[in-house]
Image (cartoon, rainbow, N blue to C red):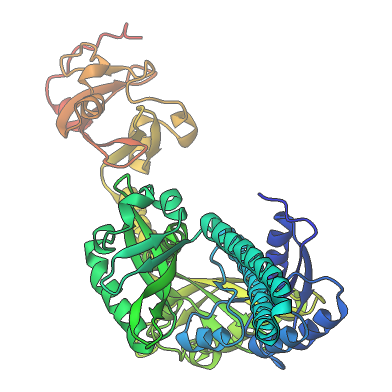
Length: 565
């Protein structure tokens, strides 16, 4: 961050939030800032403030003078650099500013780097213009003195020595002016160049070497074409042709230039035709600026905006803004899509949106409560998108922003289409209800474990057959030592033969494993068990069994080892 302390900027911006953010940015870079929220106050500030070094002017200032009108009035009073700061990029808007000042046009939200670079460039242009004007004045003075000397020479020979002295002084001043001009050229950040009518460089300033790495001797005498990217050569040739045909300085051509290290740098150039006394074009004189960083920043901004729009699209999330002062309503592309509007169309108004809301009175009241009483705006409501009969569910939140006087100014909000989520939740609740009903009315005993083998649920049949109530299940494992399990032959059954343990470890269905559960008084309940893994996170196996005690009783009873633990 550089220190520009002592330099005063008049910031003209009617949007308080933008003005405050811009003021803080400028102050962070060392500038003193005077603000004006309207064109009239900007003109008054220019008249009444002793020192203003630069004006940073918004174009759309609401009611009253707009930015271009205020700029023209200020520049009639004071000679200072004036830079336009606007969100407008339309050619018609930009063209209006060119007839007023040529110190710069910065697009809002281009970032601090672009803003500060634009301001510094404006100061440099203003200083350069002042130096060039001073040099021009010196040259004119020298010329006038030369005229006087020539007249004196014709009038009398006696004045010859005096005239020669004045001529020498004029030549000295001219030489000094040329040296100053040479110094300006040599130290300019931009590349100053001249081309022959055939496009051959006849001069390039030393800044070529600083910016592009080639020695000047490698450039002078060569055509510009080998240095320019192949895809950009046709545009450059056509632009030079326009310079000749229109006979004036033209700006704005962008092209890539090859650096000595093989990389490509983006340049923008302006040029004017050079003519002889007969008016024939004998070449071009121009200057080129490196705009690589600016272009990369703009490209990054475009990518970020596209990612933002894509994120909104993927999440079915849109945002909106309602200006209470102008009743203007704005919505993002995804907000328009949610309500059934074409993102390219401009008919997204409060009236059009409210037509899509069956419960418009409730939604409207929530907005009034937010503005008038500061109540939270967080609600769900149904909409019928424009041109559709499909009812959708929307979740919306909003907050109120006030101006510098504490008055309600802007409401910003977010909407999300939660239709599918609500349908999924409803289907899940229905599925859970069906599952729980089937779980409880099943004629089978059913037990569910987690992935560690702990029992987490069982139905009434299971609790009755196993003799375990809900409190008894807590901490019980399917392979725990608390079970007294025997095989059909009456011998102890180790846990690794349990159907549940095998299903959990082998990750497969294990069916019809017969086992006896020895209860406290030596009674045995015989069950046929099947178990299968549950493919859900956090769950282990589902165990289903039937009571086969009567069937086993009808058969030859096995001898039970009652010494089992």
